[in-house]
Length: 74
Image (cartoon, rainbow, N blue to C red; front, side):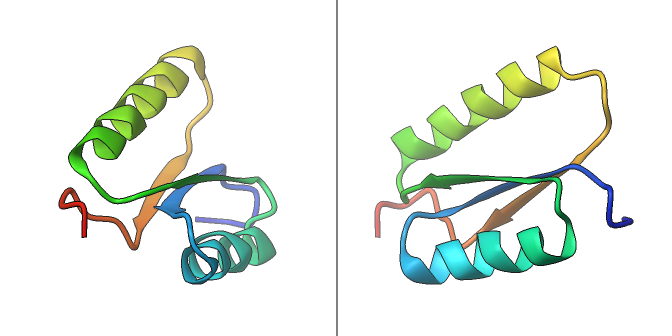
């Protein structure tokens, strides 16, 4: 990856997730979109829908990064 790589960062919606999953990536890769969510099956299904919709619309390559998430609600 280079500094112009498009990044879609999906991370847990708490301070640790925001700083770890978002701020660090945004510092290195300026073209980073941060998507905050919570643990749990329903949230992971929602993430899959968002990713599918955005990948279908986009014609540019990029990277998806998941951090600090689980399918379980805890």
